Length: 254
Image 1 (cartoon, one colour):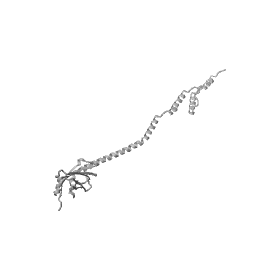
Image 2 (cartoon, helix red, strand yellow):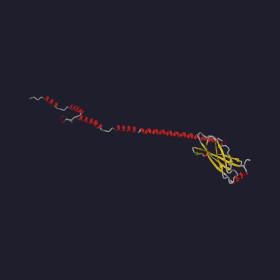
Image 3 (cartoon, helix red, strand yellow):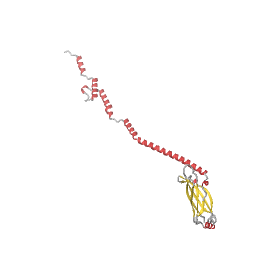
Image 4 (cartoon, one colour):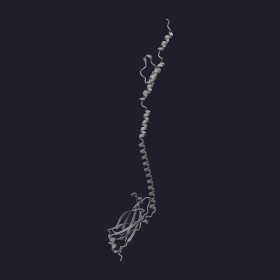
């Protein structure tokens, strides 16, 4: 019998593994959901295996990894959202602080201008022209001396102020000396005011003797004022208007 070698070769080729076909089939199986492993009878397509491994590594493994960039972005968003209230509060407090500072600056400037004007007025105003002469007289029983004094001092500076007024009374030639101090407060620019609380009691023997003889008495008084600003006495503004003498007639009218 004659052997046909071409037929045998053909059959042999038919039983060989077509690596391209196998690769194609495995790719299709993987795409469909992939059932089962490689067929040992057909051999292994290492290119296909490598491809599948890369696909698995790139797909399923990465899907379980942590995306740090996304995490950072989310954290930044959370911090930005939570800090909005704090930023707004800081802005409000900043505005309040700026307003308070501005008010203080305005107050200091206004006070400085007022004090400057006050000192200028204090120098230019002749206080003696605005204090009337004091009047004194004997009480009906001739045991005391009483009197009054008037003030009409204009305003100094821009804001309201007052003065602390001290008046020292003394009977000249009295022995022992009969004297006393009287103090009251006057608001500058408030118009004319009369202080009528002067009263000298417990007269000395010399003064009483003059009264009995009908001799005149000479009353000496000194006026000193100090400006009060915001409840504080300003020492540099203390001024002594001067010392004056007024006479009381003690003789009985006939």
